[in-house]
Image (cartoon, rainbow, N blue to C red; front, side, top):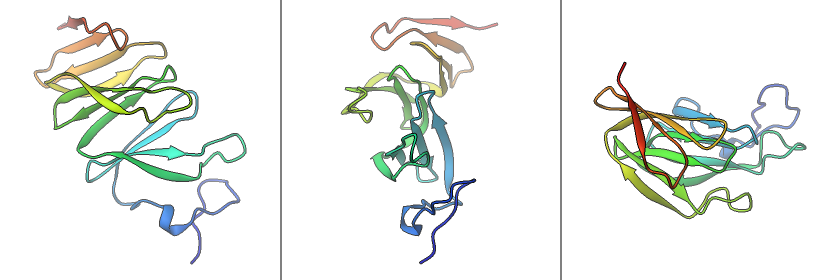
Length: 146
């Protein structure tokens, strides 16, 4: 079978490595080159093997299901909205283990999130209040309603 060329890369990607091109809901990247993708069935994938020599990486690795939104930064924070409005943070994330090992529930009523360049998170709850969170362990939220 023929491969698929991505951008200007001379190396084709094997067809079995391409997730349904018509079914990608979201892609998140970090400053240090991590790539996360959610498909139309709410499955979260991580792009494994990205290096300076292989910018497109080696393969997609399944991480979890029932994920509607993801936000990541270069500080090792990975946030996800699961079960339609529950915010989780990934625990055990290190440079050697970028997938971490489990999710830690934070709270509900969140429908969009975005990380900052440092440790921090902006989130919009499903009741239309924007909130700001600083760091993984400091679970104090500051609301901004205007």
